[in-house]
Image 1 (cartoon, helix red, strand yellow):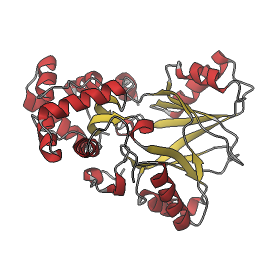
Image 2: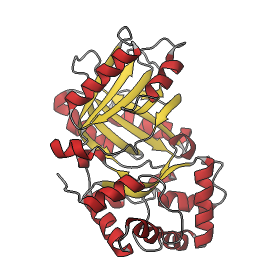
Image 3: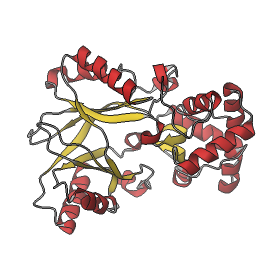
Length: 162
Length: 177
């Protein structure tokens, strides 16, 4: 587990959104946090290198930026890693999780998100993947968003006890 | 021909959007660096990003956290089979629950009856299950068929890639989670 100190936590707590939009954003952040610009840059580099941050930058609205959908396949457990590798190699796949219904009432156990520039490109990517997998993919495009925001406050106290 | 979101006004802006999928370069003047790479001035890049924020193409600008790396590893996708007339109202109710991080409506399919999805992120599975039980009790959802899918292995996680032909190289390849 990655160990984060007080400055790492303040950076995350303060700047999951509202990164200053100015010529020297890291200097503006540093001033607010009472540290140097170089210290902020070094921390962000380290957090990216350790995999704590996926990136520093914009999160695009998938519905406006292009086409995307949630998809799933049902595969035998013994083949799951191999099928996951095929899906990961497919252009446009940005999330891919093994998920399971503990009751096994429904069979889909590999869930992924696929994105593309537009609907036609997305359909072409899906069809290519279905051909490679030799099976149909469950396609679940988003019809209506009620809430999408992963910038929730990190529960540091719970993580310390975990 | 590729459709372009209405907020993108030029080929240079399209290049900027594609570069931004990889995040900002961690250097003192990141917008200047991006401006040089896409043929705009730093001021034009800043104006463009401000406009994309106003128009909603950019939902937020900041640190994008990998929750699993921090230990927020219990991640439940709860799927509900709700009457079509009631799905909007329940979606909005679930969206207001502090524990719910994502909530959306998706189509039913043959063999897949669930039309409402929500996600709950937490540090431990038992805690997420307790949060869900509280939501079910508080909102009176006992009679609505639902299913809880916990993720137990992450094969890939990165930002959306909307650039045609995937010309953007994956500089995060060093973290194949």
